[in-house]
Length: 495
Image (tube, rainbow, N blue to C red; front, side):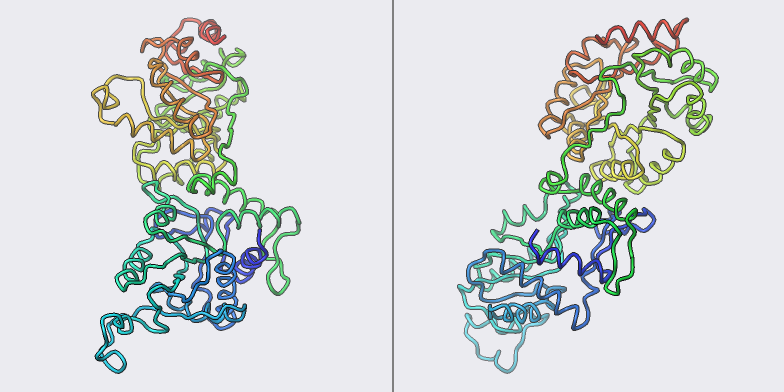
């Protein structure tokens, strides 16, 4: 990391402008409506000393960007306006004397703006040193979200005949995808030809956090007082890593590692009883009779047990006989607004559930929120998109588009998830899903229902799914006269 980046992050942190929270209760809601465990407020730089320091960091970023001979700085309304003059002064102090300007709210019609030629019309619309037609203009703003103000600035400058726009400098790049999954900065660069450089980005913050953690002793402020303990730093790092993994751009995700590799079940292949029974006594008997079967990997419980008897009681009943994973399938979770993800995850954690299943049919933003919140609360995550019954996908006469269902898997894989539910009675769909997630660099672990009553064959599904496969079997086990024998029979098909 360049020295100025490290100094900037330290400066942000010690002045309180940068916050990375170790407690979900402190998280901030962004303009995008996402709930974020980290936040930067450049608006905190509002006096001479802090503004001077901030301007120096911008100057370093511009100088180190490699832009050839910039001539003038343009402050994008609104936040960029207050940056233009201080950054120009900082540039001058570093041996680069360049001009600065910003646009007026209203066109000037008096003084030097009277009787101007069309080429000089720029003087009526700007304050500061008007750029010449071929001057290289560096644009300034605080952060980059959707980029609306940046596109407007680009259009404005080009309308004045100023087309040499090589660089846009911002303070912090959060390195997030947009709600519609686009990478906003990448798209802006491609559409405008203007490169975006930030003083620091999200992965820079993570890198320095890791340095602090390795040093030990927590973090101290400018007065030498401890403001963050070592334990808090470790938890903040974990939460920030999960957030970037879920919401980050491709570059950000690559920097922290693509896949979480959550191994929910120790065995590579197993059978998971779907415990869709009516009473708590039936559930406990099912666990008691099958827990000692080596090929039984865990237990999937649904809303009937959870709502009927309370999840804590259900988990407690299972724990009398086994420590194998308890997987909760709400049938289906992840189909509401993004805000529900936090409450759902908190409830699951309190109940003692190990793993949750999401079918995020409410869209990509709900999917990301559910995944992040589950990871944040220390839960394992399994994501599904296609189901076993007829008339689910559009190609089968249903409502959900085939590509939309694949996107559920794709977004999950990009967030580092490697556990997926697939329909065991549709081997062709399993193959499609496997191709999609492997294309994202993830080695999948599949969980498949759809056997016995729905006609699927465990051995056929396992063959397509690969080396890591868990068959979900309901009635074939819990309706058997001897559940222990039925469990042995089904697990024998995994070889």
